[in-house]
Image 1 (tube, rainbow, N blue to C red):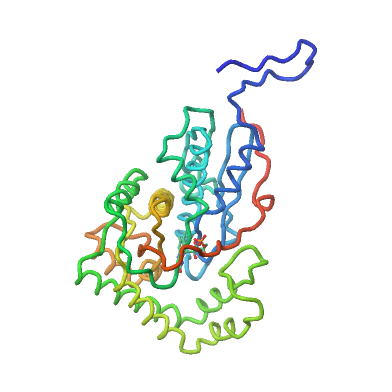
Image 2 (cartoon, rainbow, N blue to C red):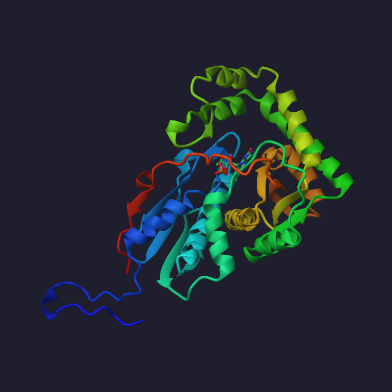
Length: 341
Ligand SMILES: Cc1cc2nc3c(=O)[nH]c(=O)nc-3n(C[C@H](O)[C@H](O)[C@H](O)COP(=O)(O)O)c2cc1C
């Protein structure tokens, strides 16, 4: 691409090639990236935006030490934000060259993206970018409508392209075994007062811009969670029936269980979710058996020895409209990227 010519008297100004998207355009992409899903809607990320590059950082001050002591899900959430950023970039006709964990597995920098203008997006890329705003996590039952033909294969392909494996759990016996693990996971978590307190601390009114939204003035719910008022049994029975009734249940798996695998799982799940949402299908998470350490070996057996990172159920929503969950203002998660040589 040609460089934009500047007048001779431009003095100290640099000649800026017109391939550089600029920080305003890149901040626009970040405003889409924050629509990624995250555990308890913690939004554990921040972004450093330059002229042609974005760094995605983990914000470990927003971790969930009881549910997620190793920041596994936190890293998955950041991986989902990276995929969303890449998808938004392609939708806008940019190409994102992405380096994952550029400072090594223990670094906070989850990815570095260099953005350049590229050929126009394909129809599929545009549909996935449009789905960023349409995707929702749903917690109730789905409708009986069948999923579009070929979608499960397209989702499996999406996971594979990001270095993860989508293992279906649609066989009756396996589904029952998974339902039992979800039930046990709920029971273990709701039995633990530390876990309940952590959950309660992320039950927020919408105006807070993060957390799991509860209507204003529902302190009763928070107190019930903290007090453990027999919610465990109720939630376990509800979740097990959601597993059994779902049209399609998938475990998003990786070979190993290291930070790179977690980033890959996050990119894979968000790519799957966007492929599904573009086709009118949404998902709900049932991760309890991944979160409760004593249940993970049994879950791994169901996955044929792979490491399950997430469990999801998919279906067509009962209602076409579901209000989006809130996000913090973009200004709160963006800083200027220092120039790097
Ligand atoms: C790593 C990860 C773990 C999650 N775990 C659960 C879960 O166990 N149960 C659940 O209902 N939602 C779970 N979610 C979904 C989040 O609660 C949801 O993304 C968040 O509330 C924002 O809502 P949205 O996805 O509709 O934008 C998880 C999401 C991620 C990325």
